[in-house]
Structures are given as structure tokens and as C-alpha cells.
Image 1 (cartoon, helix red, strand yellow):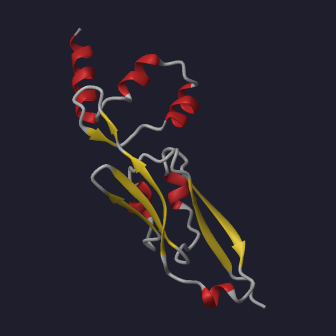
Image 2 (cartoon, rainbow, N blue to C red):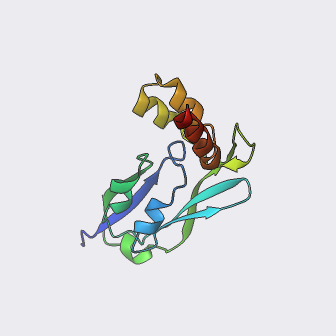
Length: 141
């Protein structure tokens, strides 16, 4: 009986910002993110992960975890290369210009900032363009 490792990508859509760092780093193209009109979709090509853990290591919001499951010898043979959707994340509206943007996960805000930086939280509700304008205006004061 073979003990070949079967790497599994576990994804948390609550933490994901759709930045695509994982997509850019994945040499096997296991992780995919498709931008849509009102959301983005995170997908995994099952059975292709080589366990390098680059996506897990470099994800800025810790939305990806790689686990190792032992293959009992049959799993490797029957393993498909099917693309499976793991979640759609809806875009939010910028509080400045009302344009659709990728969300800043509340769970990340609470964990990183302990919910205590109201100015930072307010800027997280702005798209990058509006955030730059506000920050430039603040610098001129």
C-alpha cells in the first residue's frame, strides 16, 4: 500500500480579499480566482497541489491552509483534476465614489487592529483611488 501525500487546499472566504497572491505563486495552477461583475470566485483544481505551501505562507489574510492527508493507495489513482468552487465573495461599494471594490475582511480588521483604529477602519471602506485621495488630502493639512 502506498503512502503518497494528498495535499488539500482549505479556503476561508471570510478572510479572502481576492488579491491573487496565491494564484501568482502557485506553480501547479491549483488555485484560481475569477473576477466577475459583482463578485470573485475562488476555485481549486483538486488533486494538483504539490504541497509547496507558498499560497499559505504568503496569503496576507491567512485565508488559505494546506493540509496533508495520507493516500491509501486508491485515492491517487481515482483522483480527478476537477475544478471545484470554494466560494464567491461579493464586492462591496466604496463609501467615497460608490464603485464596486473587493472587500476588506472585517475578521482581518478585528484580528490585526483589535478593532481599535477607527480611522484605519473608515479608510478600509474606500476603494484604493478614494483612499489615496483622502491620504493625500491628510498630508496637505
